Image 1: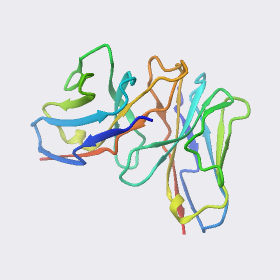
Image 2: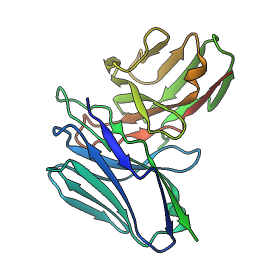
Image 3: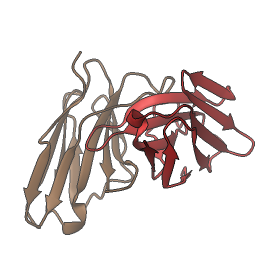
Image 4: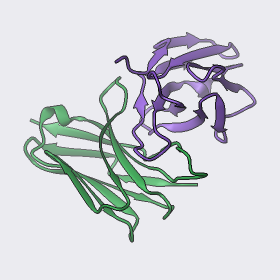
Amino acid sequence: GENVEQHPSTLSVQEGDSAVIKCTYSDSASNYFPWYKQELGKRPQLIIDIRSNVGEKKDQRIAVTLNKTAKHFSLHITETQPEDSAVYFCAARNPRRGGADGLTFGKGTHLIIQP
Amino acid sequence: EAGVVQSPRYKIIEKKQPVAFWCNPISGHNTLYWYLQNLGQGPELLIRYENEEAVDDSQLPKDRFSAERLKGVDSTLKIQPAELGDSAVYLCASSSDRGHTGELFFGEGSRLTVL
């Protein structure tokens, strides 16, 4: 099955600086890569996603890049703000049998924005 | 529109006792997932339903865990008997598309503590 590795496990940055979180996946058939944000005690929520036919996607201060050859993808947050503090999870989906499949998640990165 | 609703939010039981969690997905979402989230970890898929059919339950410990989605809408996850290691957050999620858009909508989770 799919295996997703995520680094770092904890990331502390100064407010206003950029943050980068990296993930690798094992199955070259995976074609969908979302990022979820989970605040303490809350549900995970999708913040951005990318499909395997695209190399980069941007939404305001958040961007995701995908390198299919190397099987890795990254989340970039610019001009970080206190409300960006949360745990971020990357995930990968491997389509099987033509239907929707459960996502395989990384272990998460605890992002801390220092004032 | 109401999101994914789970109950109870918190449950404390003694080991060897049974416990059940309930999930009502977003209206019209045919795919329903149960995930397990241990502290400091990413969600791990337990079971996935397409309507009332369990299409992926390979990660469900069937000796003590069971799930059902009889009418293809709400779902119940049961543990009997519970063990200390079952303490975790049980997340329910739903999606409306068969894998092409991919977004999973999560509930707030049911936090289980086994004493």
